[in-house]
Image (cartoon, rainbow, N blue to C red; front, side, top):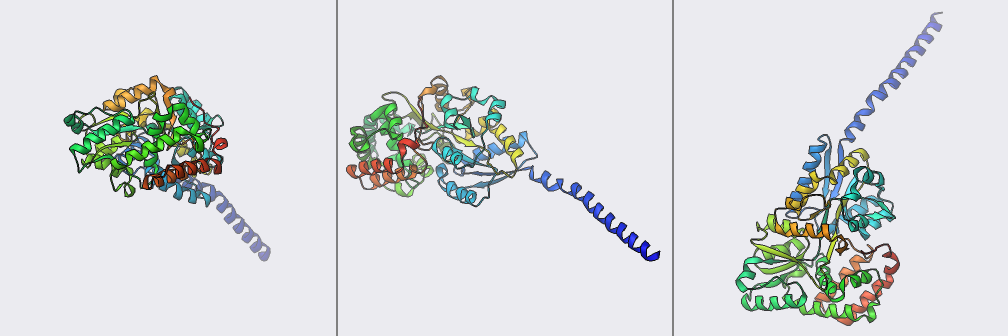
Length: 443
């Protein structure tokens, strides 16, 4: 009996330990899950003057709305996300997904969607009524196959010419609105200020060169031509418009700062702020760089004008956006983040600091402290059809875009119109631009 009793007691003891272990596990499991739900892992590239402060404003808005969420950020220096793409794509290829990351609209976004990286956000957009409060071209730029995949927090305008306002007043110059006026202004500035570059340019990341060329191309061919070109519908090899734009680009080259190949976009803006250059052609984010990096006041120290304004006033644009990855470690926190991204509570402080326009057109333009963006925001609200994707948003497929930048930068270094025309024509064919860019429509 004692042996049987011993066996029985041993069995009861073992069973009790097993049951104790089983009942203990559910109590312990929620702890790490609850801890994870408080985090948001995010990749972004806002590190330049004006950008870093805007990133802080974004996260402050998130903190106000969801104080329990801890932001784990991975900033990558480099304008337009050039460096972030390399880091992020390497991580995604390894199956190690963050919750969310900054991406642009247009072809870059389409590349992520086609690669199965992002989830569609139809339900979230419907919940927020977001399509009702942003311009149609902006909604189209962040949608693939009819579904939105990200939430835009701003609209950046690419083709803006910034200029030293006191210098222009001193020399009696008006802000240039076309290439002929720009050339004339440069002649006057060079004659009066021999040590000052006329146009500050940063070519280190190459897209700055494409920005300048786009403005020339837009004037030379007009908006319909611009869209047709980047959709691969123009026979570049036999096109007089593209050739004429390259020739004008070459004529402007002597007016750029000699060291442009080694400078980034914000350093080019800094040349104007330090009075080493008179003008620079850059997107709306340069406003933040001027105010934060050079302590310049818009309307006092610098002026701005969309460039060109002929044959019509078109705004080349792209949005900064965030979505949720298919393998987001903290999907609930990410969805909370996207709701904040769509809100005026985030967009007002963030866009005012960083330099973009509001994605939402129901925000009062006078929230901007400067007349430059007040006027731009009003123009966009009244003329949404004048928005066309720019070199950052890209009508060109994501694979072709950096190749195109390389071609234009090579041209600026060693101008050769015939060679460049053929290189662009070859690029269009090699990357199947006509088929790859067929998704884009304008207006």
